[in-house]
Image (cartoon, rainbow, N blue to C red; front, side, top):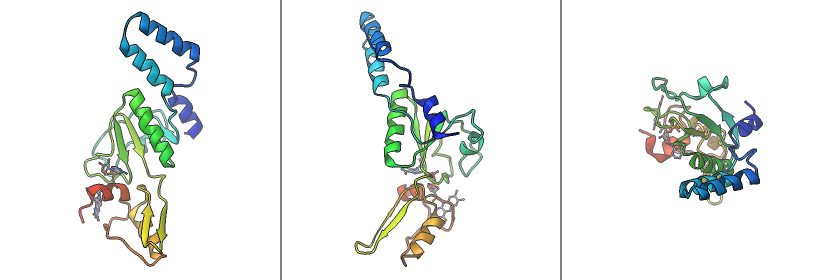
Amino acid sequence: MSTRRGAELCDSSRGLSRRHVLGRLAGGLAAGTLASLRTARAQMAAPALTGRVVLPADRAYETARFDFNRRFDIRPSVIVYPKDTGEVGNAVRWARTHGLPLSVRSGGHSYEAFSLGPGLVIDLSDMHAVSFDPLAHTITAQPGVRLLDLYRRLWNDGVAISGGTCASVGLGGLAVGGGVG
Ligand SMILES: Cc1cc2nc3c(=O)[nH]c(=O)nc-3n(C[C@H](O)[C@H](O)[C@H](O)COP(=O)(O)OP(=O)(O)OC[C@H]3O[C@@H](n4cnc5c(N)ncnc54)[C@H](O)[C@@H]3O)c2cc1C
């Protein structure tokens, strides 16, 4: 599905007019409920969900909702593919505003499908840039890069990292301790 359509479907602030919000605030105060005030405030501040969005009705959903290990049959409410850190931040705020649990996926090779959940899945596979600074001798890599692509990219600079033998493992999950050597 297109980014635009996804954003339209998932942007709860769209169509929420100032009058509507003030009306809700007034109603909440009249009822004396602090909860209503908090909810209305949160909706006013709710960011749009940006990036490529896949919803259960989309054709891409049946593939996107699985990790490498297809044994786990999990149905996230929304899967979003941010293209930069700004969009990751939007996704986190969007999930918080809507009270949805969050999962993070880089290469999707969690043996137990820990990168999936019933709420919002932030899939980082579109964030796969790699750079090497020869002066500082430092590699900067985004979490969605797959190991084989990372090795290939670093080969051009004559450097390497210690990683796994599986080409499609993501750097994100490996770097946070999921690697087994
Ligand atoms: C077929 C297969 C072969 C493998 N081969 C090897 C191997 O040769 N060598 C080796 O060392 N390991 C290997 N592994 C293990 C693998 O390294 C780990 O499972 C690793 O965690 C997978 O990372 P991922 O990003 O692909 O997985 P994901 O499923 O995306 O993530 C794994 C975990 O890390 C979390 N996570 C992912 N990205 C982030 C992030 N950016 N920030 C915070 N948390 C994050 C997820 O939420 C999840 O809990 C293999 C796994 C499989 C399934």
